Image (cartoon, rainbow, N blue to C red):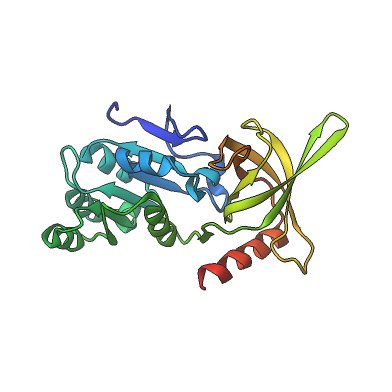
Length: 259
């Protein structure tokens, strides 16, 4: 990666160059800025997650110097890096970032390092890291720790019925699916229909059988085959959800996260 280049996490889980992490989308509540080391970016891109569905903007780097530079210039909402990097190590990035004047010094730093090295974990904590995570942790654990740091509630493998409505000219077709997981920014749905990325649709979520469904427009970010035969997994991002629906969904997630 060229020094100073920045990358945006996109539905295909491929990085594309961009000028910086600022833009009109950043004033929306679920759009946050992250700095991730390249290896962690790749690990998280393998799983459909709130990072992808909420279209978080992500700067990545392979070396400690690249990551430190990105964190200083972008003032992200969180930094998650591997300890063992080219150049500066994770604890050195954290120490230098925490000494940076201005907003960057207050950015939460999560370091993923050796699981059986108390000395490394201690060095990272003394450098000021907010959390030390064993490198044996899987992507879902990394997502959970990151979500907790960002204050983004999400619920893994929550199975609720979802009806997808798609317009084909004057014809409206509806398909039933079931959620695999859900966040405030979007949902992963398993259904019998494969829908192209970028397609807009309407979504009805039956989060409580005794109350009317939650209705919201959504956009397909990606579609892939499900492990189950003849099924597809659709990563959907909510679009323009009204305030009462957003509050209702937030309460639904928070109640289950606290279980």
